[in-house]
Image (cartoon, rainbow, N blue to C red; front, side, top):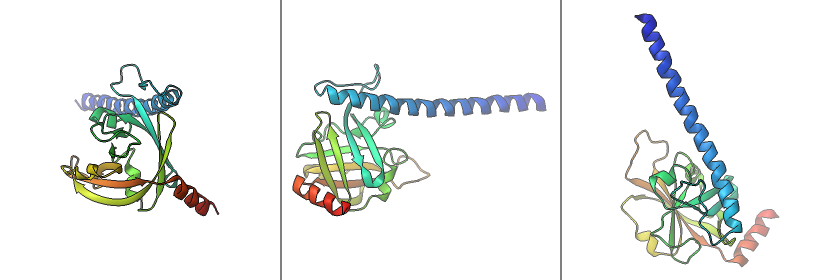
Amino acid sequence: MKAVLGALLLIVGLALFGHGSYMQAKAWLAQHFIEQAWQLALTTPQQQVKPWFYADSYVTAQLNWPSQKQTLTILAGASGRNLAFAPSHFLPSGELGSERGVLIAGHNDTHFAFLQKVKVGEQFSLQTQNGVIEQYQVRGIEVIHQSQHHFLAQAGLYLLTCYPFNSLASGTDLRLLVSADKVSSDKASSLTSTTNS
């Protein structure tokens, strides 16, 4: 009986290990396909380029945050499925790069984990599929309730993730909201030259 139980536990353990390895491999491969799709999307700005043929989303922008050592490709549509693979643009908000309130969401234990270290004043950029790169500066960081969306009435780029970080309970009602404004090209170049000197 002990031998049977031992064999059963070994099989279950191997199955769990195999499943975990499969999920890790799938996540790594997805990132590779998303990056390939982004490179193709930059050469075909009028097309919606899917990372894999059966994807229900397409790549739409790339976020580059040098001070946090983050470069993240953004998918269109902030569904649970898309968020599992990459930060995603909440389509009912403004278009990426527009003067409206634009929302990008991401998971706090993967792609947007770095938001817990972000400070007001940090700069980053967002490149849209047409090749335009806009510079942004963080103007505010706050914790809000998931039902709040009034912030979208104000122009800016908003990054949203679940809060608190490293929580044992999933599905909390709180969100961390990072608000950023476009930086004029004059201000961006002066800030760049100041930091480089």
